[in-house]
Amino acid sequence: MHESSSIRKVDVIIVGASLAAAAAAKRLIDAGLETVILEKQALPRHKICSGILSPRGYRFLLENFGPLPAETLHAPTSCRGVTFHFPCMVPMPMDFFGGTTPHLHRKYSDHWAIQRSGAEVLDQTSFISLRNNGGHVLVNARKKGGAELQFKARYVIGADGPSSPVLRSIYPNYPKQIPWFFVGQKFHEIIDCPLDEDYFHFWFHPELGHYTWSHARDGKQIVGVGFKKGDNFHKRHQHVENYLRDKHGVHLKPADPDHEGCAENFGPSLLNRYVFGQGNVLITGQATGFLNMIGEGMSCALHSGAISGEAIIDALRLNQPVQDIYRKMISSEVHNTTDQWNPLKIAFARPHEADFPAALMALPRSERIKVMKDIWRFLVLYKEFKWGREIASRSMERLLYGKYQDHRWL
Picture (cartoon, rainbow, N blue to C red):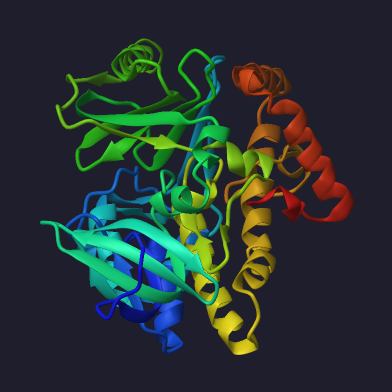
């Protein structure tokens, strides 16, 4: 990449018109920094997501962007909490702390937040490459139709999801170093569904896959499955559909043709192996590896996105390297997210926004034992990734030092 007179100079380029991008842009624009968001799709764009937002994510949206318009929500418009299901057939409904949360329609909620951020947005513009040049970053992009754009930015933020092209541009081998999962969902018209539509339903069942869920949306039922990348999605989904029918009395019509899926990076949140960038390039949102225990990544994206923006503001104000500042500030989100996967925190604290220990202790002793056995059998599903000892080590590290060590981060 070479500099030319046609290069546009800006303070910050953000790649991806995501919730993380909106949160970062809001901080940057409020601080008076010229910020441009590049989005490869036409806006408003479709986003693969169940849409169930956590309470802390909801609080962030209200505090930073205001009340959500009606068009940003699916029906039912809110979610009361989470219900865990187990092979022993003991259900564990858990209400969110602080009441119901919104059921976001990501196509419109993300666009609404991006517009509210005040940033300039170039949609149908794909990020191509970048080069860290000490005090600035040269960015190449391409408009749909072929026109090339070049930018000279003081900073770049990659807010472009788990398969982040920005991340791959600075760490080309990173995607090969972590296991990837495929997460897909299909939509069914409902014949009969006894599952309470006020809850997000999640199954701890090793025979159903690494991540299995279902909930109501816009008069239909989502049936979702997650499994190691390479398995057959349609067979996995059919197995789950049959299980819901046989064990829960969920009778659905054949799935709509518009099923969807994407690759996910579950491992970093469990193991404190996040990636936060290099030089003047920051990685934020789910691209870093942030993902809550029930697979909700929106609250992580919002908070980490805001932190990336704040880090840039402080770096300019203090004339210090942005990576040093970002990595100190982002530790709060690391604690919040990795604590959710930490067995010691789950047992003795309240890392989630629903009270799992209280729900477990409310069960009769015989059912409690069955549930704990089922959870253990489910965790064995991850044995092939050799995560057990690492999770135990991170848990002890948090107990002894009060934090997760940052030397594991890229």
